[in-house]
Image (cartoon, rainbow, N blue to C red):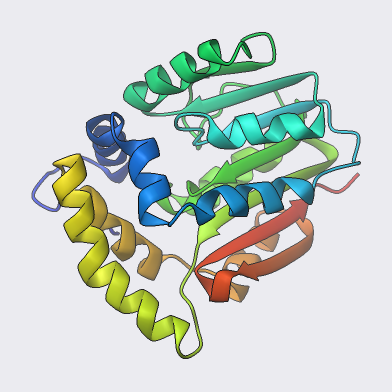
Length: 241
């Protein structure tokens, strides 16, 4: 199992929470800087896939500072609930939402992706951006997402993936191995966080491998949509009616 802090005895979940608490003050800035701002386009394209599906209640898991939850407002839902295990990330997200005057639409709260604090069949859609690879037990998290999703509901996952073809594969490997950890260390002051990022991406079962796990956890009508040469992928799934 890939973890942020290899010299600690804490489990992955606790380490991920500590890591995001550590970098929360610089997370939004680094996110946009290290991706060249293309993460904004990825979120926009992903949310468009859920438009015109009558979605009224959305759960955004690993919501962080709330960027994906804010983007999901384009679906015109009645309510969006964001959950995350990092108090630090949520604090910045709540402040952002307050400044934007969105508190009546978006609520952020502490929540464990593997033990979601919601009843069965509660949400029309579930979204996750760059969070599922941080789950301690991927299948357990996906099954709990399936549980709280309404029959016929949609699950949208946006996650980093490993490019498979030249030249993007070689360019991405060089950038993630050398540039990403250096820039992350200089700006966030937490060298482990941006060493963990490429390591966790490399270890994650992406593409067809993820689709197999997705379907094993109950999701149907699954789709894998690679973007930007395979650096990022969108995964769609649905809960049977």
